[in-house]
View 1 (tube, helix red, strand yellow):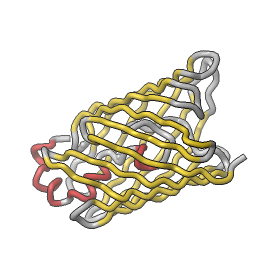
View 2 (tube, one colour):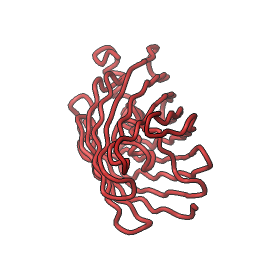
View 3 (tube, one colour):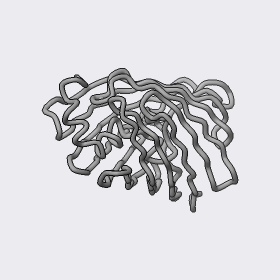
View 4 (cartoon, one colour):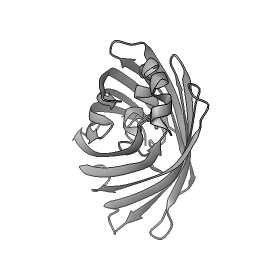
Length: 229
């Protein structure tokens, strides 16, 4: 879910499986709490387990890459979520990911919710992403949610690290149909990232997502939700 693309292009193409999933490993590929490219301060409800199966069509250095299946399992605690993911990059080896997010402060009408998170990916190489995000809910029904944050990326396939900003906005009542837009200023391998994602509940426990962007050309997933309060 990236600095100096021309400098690392050879390494990027040699490590397509990792870069396809890690640049930056999209929150949409790591469960249903986040936008297409930008995480939010939302976490899986306490006691709930989400199981997601997804497909992602990516474009890396003008090369099309299909990632299927993406399998993700997330579990929510009181103020946190942890998860694990498996990515099969078609024609290449698989990548595994582990992620965690913790809500530092809960928001109100005047104060944003703040959360910190980490993502670790391991394939032929590895990458660690750390982020801090703040999400402010607007309106009486929380139908608009604005997120801003900072992202730090440290891959093993180049000596550079990356520190950048990101932002997003989501419209719609939580638990109903929502649409979100996001932007990452400078991902370490893909440069700027932008995208849109729609979430549509099919039943009370099944969620459908579809997203498009300049890096993730077409993303779609189904998430089944179990347990919770």
